[in-house]
Length: 157
Image 1 (tube, rainbow, N blue to C red):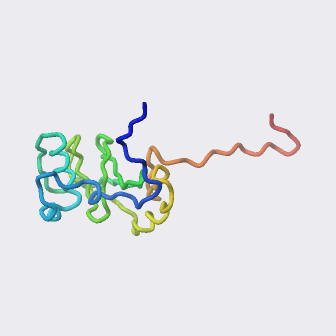
Image 2 (image 1 turned 135 degrees about the vertical axis):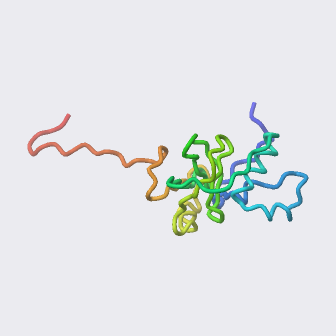
Image 3 (image 1 turned 180 degrees about the vertical axis):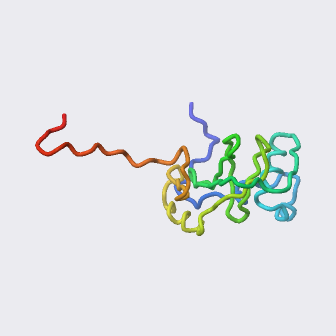
């Protein structure tokens, strides 16, 4: 039997960013939530959902390139240590993994994030996928390899 309490999937919308996804806990006023930087909202959101505290770390892990991507209509980035993903934002290009707690990573967004969002505009949410040109992500579609042309006069079977 199909569930009736699940809202239908939107056919198209702008890609979600951290500030649109991580909403304030029920007892926190919206005005207080605006004081939390978008990259840090995941910590408060996760603590509320998991009912456990997370350590607050300062500093940034150096020498690691992390490229966000638009995946099914959400800006996401994968933790380079454990591959856990979370929703991120170009407004605060940092990632703190709430799974392995490996630290803050600086994110390498495209020079023009709005151009990436425009590239997927109008597509169904499930087809809103975009990768940074320099990213060699595991889930990035590859160009199909073509068979070399057969030598002159020979027919391939």
